[in-house]
Amino acid sequence: MKKTISVNIKGINFIIEENAYERLDNYLVRLRRSLNNQEGSEEIIEDIEIRIAELCKEKLNGSKEVVELVDIESIIETLGEPEEYVHTDEETTNQSQSHSQNQSQAGKQEESDAKHEKRLYRDTENAQIAGVCQGIANYFNMDVVIIRIIWVLIFLFGGFGMLLYIILWIVVPKTNSTIDRLRMKGKPITVETVREEVENAADTFRKSTRKFASQIRENGPYAKKINFIGRAVSVAFALFSIFIGIISLIAFLAFLVGGFQFIPAKTDSGFLSISQIGELALSSSSDVSTAWIGGSMLAGSVILFLFLFGFYILFKLKNKWTRTSLWLLFLTAIVGGVICIWLGLKTGRDMTITGEIKRSIGVVSTEQLIIESDLPQWANTGNIKVIAGNQDWLMEIKDNRIYNSDIRFKFRESKDSLFHIHEIASAKAHTMTAAVKKAKNIHHPMVLIGDSLKVGTSYDYPKSDKFRLQDFYVIIEIPANKSILFNGKLIQLGKDYDFEEKESENEYTERGRLRGDGRYEHNY
Image 1 (cartoon, rainbow, N blue to C red):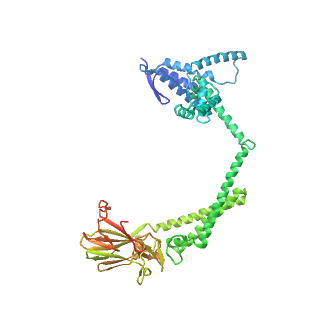
Image 2 (tube, rainbow, N blue to C red):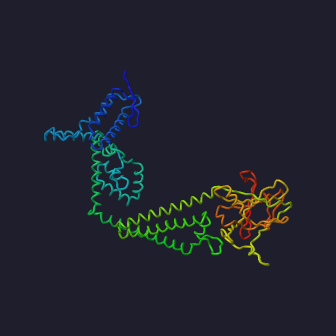
Image 3 (cartoon, rainbow, N blue to C red):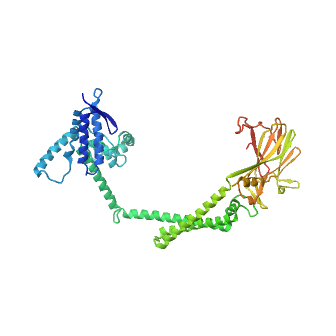
């Protein structure tokens, strides 16, 4: 009866006799000590452990589940003792003895190579595409050039070369470790062969690195090409920087001289400019002045930076004055950007709290409520009535008041036999008191005369209230089996609407919108 233990070798669990484990552990300790000062020792040890796990797995079968001492001795004999392959500078034998031993060892190596099974892998380290041809050349011990010529002939005259290459690319595994490279070459997997393969790979990497470094040196064959490509990229980048600077300068001058009026709004001077929008959004005149300073610092420094940076690269202006100027422009842009961000945060604070008010316009007892849009005075003169004015502007600014077109309507079911008419106004500010005050300042012309309701096509508020997301809509409660005639359009709850659509409060609602030119749209 022998004591066993459970061990894990490279992710595989084995049951192994205790004395066998001690022998294997002693072997690995001696291996680490032997390879302590050699390059790639960790990779060698890892590959040997992988090979030990494979050999242990081969020793087991359905009737045998424990790795015995004799199995470990066989594995160590296959791999070789570590001390046999330690490099020393001391000559222990004379030339004749060394020659004799080399011949004997070469004979053993050839015998082992002949018995060792080769496997087909893709050699990605020496590949031109995927390493298929190089892998086949290694397997058959042929010159890879011959394999590639054969493949080209198959591709040109056989018609299936490309398909066959792709299939082999998918099916044949690539070499992922030193053991895979040894199997690809048909070499036995021992401590010595693993060490030699790691050293060869490291030597190949060093040679390729030195070759590439010599090629890109000042007098190397690729130096002129690299310098030309680098210079071409630098010139292209410099010209692009100058081009962006020119475009930015034109836009900035247009903004300063012409105000850059492009925002659709009806004012005495035409469309709104960015500066006018800023005056309507910022809280005070001092904020407007600060915004001008910050914006000018940001825009001016960025434009100058683009020009100077382009010339710096294009004409190689590598002097202290140019570098100092670039840094000063960069810092100025940062300061300008911080000022603009601070103003944005300050203005955003005025839009944090919503104040909403509800006004009752009146109550009507009738079978049908008639609603007519009330266009501005200029729209109706004598016997002429404007029926479509194409008023698609966002707002109108007149007499220190801001006018917004489009009045929204919500139609709900009345709880009694009367029509109830309300209006809701809301605005934002940094306090509830200020928000409610701004909401109260919203004015909308709406007059109830008998069973008729005259509705203005816009609402307005003082210019001094600024833009604070002012909003306005009308709520009309319709009794059951009664209707509304809106600009000649009949409105009955549920007539053209899906009753399955409910609001959050489970109250059925239909919507409409009165456009600035007097047109009404229902269920928009």
